[in-house]
Length: 428
Image (tube, helix red, strand yellow):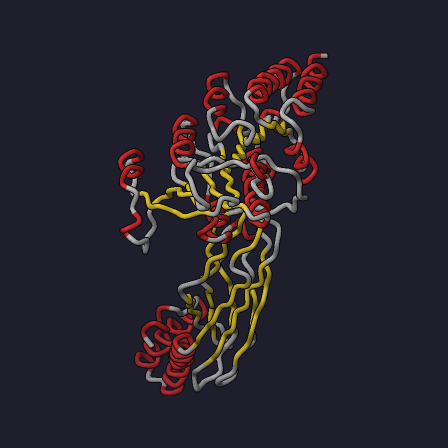
């Protein structure tokens, strides 16, 4: 009741003020009829406050979001089930579900009334264009009486969460460097040991048997490492993602960083489906293996952001410290000569693929600046190609599915020539 009085509208307060004025006048003038009018004017907002307050306290809401994880551009359905568990019907209800800006405008629905123990369902869809983790809800309900004398707002907490992962591009099967399947003597061995099984180490995870701790590797890396038995034909791949904020241009879903994150997710999913054990290394904190599940890997990419303090040297050291021989796919922004020398030390000779993103092509630059950017890209391409890397240059507007077959080209093949020709064209 007291909570309902706090929700009195301007009209309800005016009724109470009129009732008080009429009561005072009735006493001063000795008019009994005026006193009856004062009682009537006071009872109406009080009854409305009681009615709305009781209805507000007896509403229940269930929420269902499906699916909870979607890629950018896909749709998710939100279903709200509202029930009136009171012995009184409700008045007019205004429903507003709280959504962040990235999920679109907040849906608003008006329900005339809910009868005794009656339920109603409301559904709407969201289609986010930016990846991330977003709260869905809580639901806010404004309850009012038929006369508009009292209005209260009720929030149903907690809400739910929607995870928006990068857009996944389907990639065709190509001959990848470092693929051990059926490679015979030329296959890449993780550790040179005798016997049918290879012995490797990996980081300790909760639940691992402490008897499998490899103390020499633990002392060398400074982290608790355990032995892992792997079959000699196992394929492994490490995806390296450059998150330096200064290496990316553009804003929103069309930025060069978003292209790179979507490419990393697409390549990780493709390699995992091809039988690779995939490890993703990005920024200062992300180091996740596909053994933890594809969903967990994509969730990490949903949260990743450009880092202003990120150092490429630390990223390379982290990769080299824990990467066995195998395929290395590096998605990199513009590189200085020193950065290029760092990258050449990743992975094994002949088992590296570098997507070199010309992020400056996302900007409208003058001709001389564009020529400098193309020349820098060509220089880095030549250095990496000489070290056995397969290079895939990326410019604004390139489609990953279209350029993906270039990873099968020989390091001395068309990638370097394409960049050189592009550089020459930009000079002209």
